[in-house]
Every structure is written in structure tokens, then in C-alpha cells.
Amino acid sequence: MNEIFAFLWQMGDKLAAHVLLAAAALGLGILIALPLAVWANRSLPVARLSLGFASLVQTIPALALLALFFPILLSLRTVFGDGLPTLGFLPALLALTLYALLPILRNTVTARDNMDDAVIEAADGVGMTKWQKLRLVEAPLAAPYIMAGIRTAAVWTIGAATLSTTIGQPSLGDPIFAGLQTQNWALVLAGCIASAGLALVTDALLGMVEAGFSRRNRWMVWGGIALALAGIAGAATTLRPHDDRSVIIGAKSFSEQYILARLIGHRLENAGYAVEYRDGLGSAVVHEALTSGAIDIAIDYTGTLWTNQLKRSDNPGRQAIYDTIEKWEQQTSGTRILGRLGFENAYAFAMRGDRARQLGIATIDDLARAAPGLTIGGDVEFFQRPEWFAVRDAYGLKFARQRNFTTTFLYDALIGGEADVITAYTSDGRVAADRLTVLEDTRGAFPSYDALILITPKKAGDSGLLAALRPLVGAITVEDMREANYEVDRLDDKRSPDQAARDLARKIGL
Image: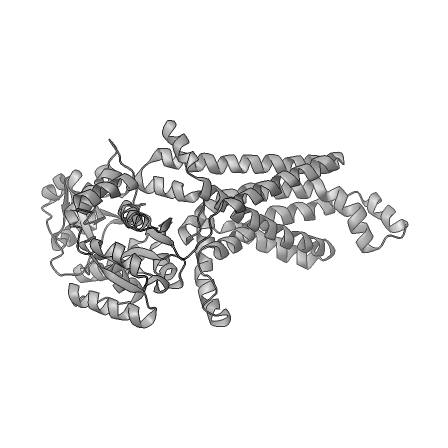
């Protein structure tokens, strides 16, 4: 319990960012929904179209809706220029605004539909204009119902905002995603408690406003609004400005990335930089975030860049892949590759040692013969990646069943018998700890996955930053990285990524 409270105490920046994002989305949703509802009440086709669209949005999973705005905004850059942000606050704001529309719109339309016809006729009878009738009769009568819709939208928006972590927007989703990936349940609970607490406080304040409208009590209305605005203003003053001595480090959603991000962060803090972290970024998001300046530094892998960015499926060898990527980055985006960290985190197929011995499987060729009777487990993106298509076609792999697991539970699925073989990562500590057999890729279907330090173009010439990070180049062996990863991944005597990063720094002499 003390650990949960300690995490809660450290979440000031995440809470402030979450408040501002949710408030902006809810405010924009209100500005769109209320005029649209007035129009819908006067036009049946508009009502059908607007409510149908808002209902359709609700059928799209929030995570998918957030991700969809990335390619949309990317395509709009041809119109608005490279200054249009494709990650972070803007796509999160647009997606959450769409999510907020339905309850406000539906409650407003329903309130008007169920209004007493005698009251409306009386307003017409005294000669009120449409504007007067809206302002003096319809709006006051509908206000409690509208506020009920706003309350619902607020709770939905605060909950969905935790998912904005995946597209580079800081939020209370940061500790939740980090805790899930490292199996630090205290961190997950701290993020959930903070998010739920924010939703409850917001609902209470908006409930006060709703009660004020119902009772015709202006003090309650304005008091609730004033308290809500004070909270938003407080959140705005909490956030730190980003300056030239600030560095944002991005990390994908697995333990190794969290550890390396902290290792880099410690080096930069010692050099006098203010450091922020963007954890839990999707693999496809990281490179665009780096080239656009949304983050300043990231760790990526040659194989990932080779397949995702260069769209290559051949395998010319480790050095040729590295040289080609380095040249491509300079020519296309100006992103600087400082160098290789010294270890490789490659995709590999792994089985429980006893199961592999039982079936006589030591290579992927052996696996191909047994595959029709086996279940393969992969991370959430593996079976859509070029690496899977390459190795599948190279060996003619046809499994009885494919299953997806988050990286948090991938190894547990193998040990628990939910999968016979999984897509492991060669630098994971659990490979050795669980006594797994890594199958030999005799045909070289998987490309090399050397870990690289990538620096955004705007920081590529920062001599102080480069000097702080150069000692990391070539300094980390795969054995060192496995040990650091296992410190975070193991269930007993678990270490935080920050602690594991400090242990790793000491081990490699930094």
C-alpha cells in the first residue's frame, strides 16, 4: 500500500496532462454537440445523421480511434505542412472529442423531444422568436438533462484518455501501461486509482452544476463551474515548459525500452538536462515521433527499421543493414544514429526446454515439420509484421493455431501451456530464467536487430547531449541486458526500470 501511495505522489505531471487533455476534449465536444443538437431538433435528417455518426464512433475501440488519427494527420501534412503534429496532444484531442459527442448530443435531443408541448405552445403564443424560445424556455428546461450527458461524457473521456499514452501524449495511462509491461501491479493500481479519483471528482463537480440547474440555484451552478475551472487552471500551472535543455526520451512498451530510456535519462540529467519520458509508445509510432520532434531520443532496432521503415525483406547481413539504415536516415529525415549499444534483441522462436526435447525440435526447420499440430503465440503485432511473413515463407510454417498475447503475458502463456512456441526476444531475461530453448534460424530469415541510439534532427548537433551519450555506444552486452531485463520482469524481488538502469550503469562502468 505504501508503494501505491508513493507512486501516486509522483504523478503530478501525468495528472496535470490528463486533466488538460480531458478538459479540452470535453469542452470541444460541448461546443460541437450543443449547436448540432439544436439543429437536429429542427431537422429530422440532421438528427438521424448526427446521432448515427456519434453512435458509430462509439463502436470503434478507443485505442483504434486514437491510432487512426495518426495516418489521417500524416496525410494532411501535404496540405498544412510539416508543422502539423501527428502525435501527442492533437490526435488525442480529436479522438476523445468524437468519443464525447454521443452522450451530450443524445441527451440534448432527447430532452427537447420530451419537453411539454404546452410549454412550447405557450412560448409561441406570447410571440417569442426562435432565439428567445431557445434561450428562455428550451435551454433552462433541458439544462439538467444536458448536464447529465456532459457528466457521462466526462467520465468516458477521462477513462479513454489513459490510452493516449500509446500515441505519445502524457497521461495517467503512462503508469498503467508501464506497470502492465513490467508486471508492477502497484504502479498499475496507482494509475487506475488516480484516473478513477479524477473521474469521481469531476462527476461530483458536474453533478453539483446539474443539481443547480434542477433547483434553479445559481450559486450551485457557478460554484461547480468555478471549482472545475480552478482545477484546470491548477493543472495548467503544474506543467513544466519545454526548453532547449529539456530532452524527451521515448520508449516502446516493454521492459528493455523502459530500462534503456532511464539509462539515457540518468546520463543526461548528470549533464544538466531536464528529462521527460514518453513510455508505452507503439512500435509504429516511435520513428515518426522522433523525426517530427515529438520526442528527442529513442532506442530502436536495425531489423525493425529495415522492415517497417525501409520496407525491405532481404537480409544482406548485419553491417550492410546498419550502413543502409544510417544513410537512409540522413537522406530522408536527418535523424542521427549515434551508434549501436552493443547487443542485439532479435525475434526468435522459443519453446519450453522439456517440450522441445520431447518433440525433437532444435531448429526452425524442425519446428516446420511439427507445426501443423502446434499452437504459436506472438505479441500483438507480430503476425502482421514483415518478419513473420519472411520466416513463415522461408520455412513453410503452418501452425494449427495462432494466438496473440501482450508482451506482459507472452512467456506466461508458454509456461502455462497456452502456446507450444512463442516469438521471444533474444535479450529477454526470461529466456534463461525459464530455461527456454531458442530455435536456431538456419536460413537467416530474421534480420539482425542491433539496438541503436536515435536522435531527432533538432538535437543531432547538440554537442553536450552527444558527449553524454557516446560512452553508451558498444558498452552493453546481451548478457548485461538480459540480466537488467530480468531484474524488472521477475516476480520475486522485482526492481523498477529506474533501479535496473542504475544497476546496468554500474555493471558497464558508467
